[in-house]
Image (tube, rainbow, N blue to C red; front, side):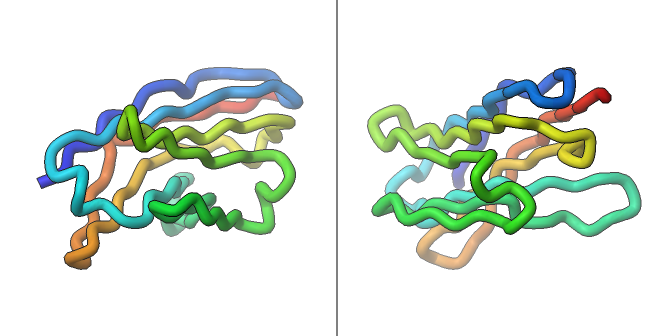
Length: 116
């Protein structure tokens, strides 16, 4: 089992910044890729950014150049630094861990609201 505890999020004005954190516990050695997804009402959850255990990152086109995913393996924590936030970034953000055995684990979600 893997447990993911998220922190961060909140309300920010357009152009501002926020950082999300996701601390993993449990079977840490089983975790491979870690991801951040987001979801708005009525839409499917979408992948925002991912990072492999070796540090290779990928980003959705909508956030490239503004968001940065990072991973501190010593703290078993993954971060999402969000800069130049736009109202369309408003969503619930979820941390996700893929295990090497093919199981997905999810955090409980963090609400990010970007005002105009």
